[in-house]
Image 1 (cartoon, protein in one colour):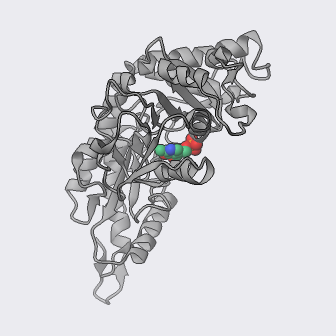
Image 2 (cartoon, rainbow, N blue to C red):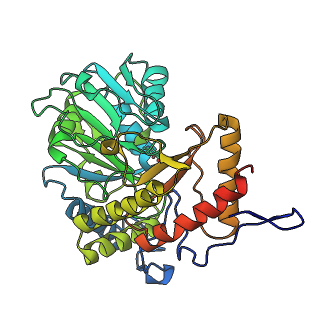
Image 3 (cartoon, rainbow, N blue to C red):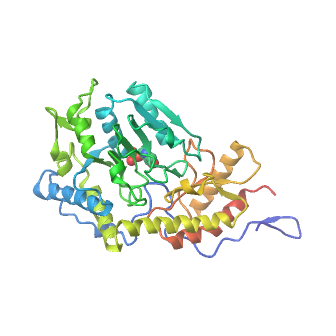
Length: 390
Ligand SMILES: Cc1ncc(COP(=O)(O)O)c(C=O)c1O
């Protein structure tokens, strides 16, 4: 607690004795897998053509491990594509939207970004169903004969869809799930997902740069039966002569990937396998989010941004300050808390996203250790005490 001496001078609150061993709580890039170090990465593919036998086999290995760890059905294609998750989402939107009415669901910044793409760039006049930060839109409004675009986990509000039950089994539209902060930490119902995207720097603690695009057989059917009436840059093109370019889904990437980033991703996938695969990744994320929830529950100055526990993320946990201060003051408090904690190497990058309501965002993905989340609690108190007017 901040204290006052006999002379009236304030004394800075005592610093907690223990620090998180790895204070990496940013929401992607995030903590590397436990035990990671650069000298543990395989390097034989570096300095070689990505089209060489070894280059292609490492890319294929990354795809095969992704399938195994995520439990993606054999009938689905998995491709490594340019420009991170954004690249994967946009190449799907640009290539596949048009033949059906489109619904965009948006409840935070990234979902809003896909609305902007659909409305202002593609000009396809989608139906837009929105909810404010901290809430989920009414999913029962989604029509099964529309294509629907949504984020599985809204990284900037900490709100996720609780499951895929709202997606009809007999839908005629396609589902497009931006699942970048969900895959590996949440069970994905593949039969409900036609286009799924993610990047490596989220739950797996990989490097930025590449996206992964997972396509159901119905998504491939769309690609092969529909030619959009719009220019497609080379890095978006997945078909040739009306046929899927299968090579993209076997490791022959469209353009040059970073083999270092690929090797780093393979390290993360092999770590995932070594600890027990997807179930253990999900369990680790949930244990971290539960530990953070205990911290929140024990403090009257801190609360979850999403009111409903059923929609709260177990990766990007978004918290708000419980205070009468106005939004600008809260934003300044958050900024100060985050920079104090960074300067102490107690927590990196935990200020909420720039467009979200002011608050803290603490990453709880699978590469974070629960003991580090637990060690963060007293540091949050320490930072809070320093920004609280007395
Ligand atoms: C839900 C969501 N979509 C898209 C992105 C953009 O990802 P990338 O930088 O991999 O393109 C992010 C990044 O945080 C995200 O959280």
